[in-house]
Length: 494
Image (cartoon, rainbow, N blue to C red; front, top):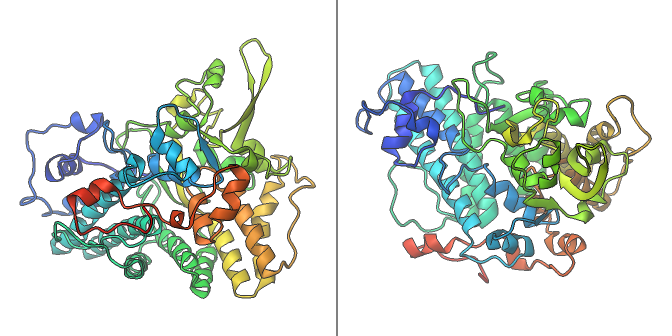
């Protein structure tokens, strides 16, 4: 579900004049003669819609400066580098090198960007949640908009609490300037409360009117992941099953179809963030970010422009796949066909976000970032079922994902066989491996290794000489934030 929400002049002005955030080119082209203020905003139904649209806007790129949106790159790049998934190949980026080698400290600028963008989104959400109920407007729409803002606030706090542990919990428009950290358990309570409220959102929206908006299914799916992270397996299974039983989502038969531009907002997308194409909708400056960061520059011979191959998969990841696993050929590129029709072999790079047919020149990709898709829900349900001593159900649902991996676009091959009724311990290993192969470069891997306590054992297999420590199950609180706010304590050993 793509972030192609109608972004009116009022919403642009909200960002420019109320929040004082640097704007992208699209915003600068707006007529600023009738600038609004906090005092005369939040008066009409249009103001309420614009306010919530502004929260969504922070999920993508929000400026042409150094600060980007929540899911622009720092989030998913960090989750890939600080794991057994990716290596940094971008010259002159010591902060990313540190994440990949687990030598990062509180001065890391990438972690600072993650912290700041999540909290900026929370700030805008808090304003919307507090002010929209005071607007005289259609009550059904008013409730829906508040619940959308709560969904987004809950999602941001879920990001923060997993990454940093105890974090300041801010839920009001006006808060203390120097808040202390709140216990992670209390932050999780707020995440659950926000997402539970968002369960009242619509199952879907009319065609062409709601792309990118949160739905009831998105709230339930993220809730299932919250409960899985908290090891509350009965609730994780229950929420995942509600999503499954809603009949709103399906797997694409072919894994290659998941990342085609024609599949945006399609049947497997539960909640995604668009970086997309304009046409009167939200259009941001850094389209094609996935391809720039992941595809090798050598592919320029095929007509690709600006690809850099900044983050590359570990060879250990590539070797995990069966040779005929459909996900391997879709996820990675290992050869280049140049203009002279000769072929050169290269080390694996990640190509899954490049739809070669729709966008031969990958620098302009309008693909989405998948925050959560239906395959994730199936694997959550499988994992939670296994933890509740139901190996039959666990096998049934993990095998739905594995069956698709056997499909080569035409027929099902004799590869990626079904699992039988595995022991609980064997299933833990199996589902963690399945998630690794299914969600490459989707911002999942560090979170999976952290919640399963496997950082120290699995990372060294992919990165010889790199061994995470106990402290690496959280990231340090950014020092710049602590310099401003002396009430912020630091995580252990940083």
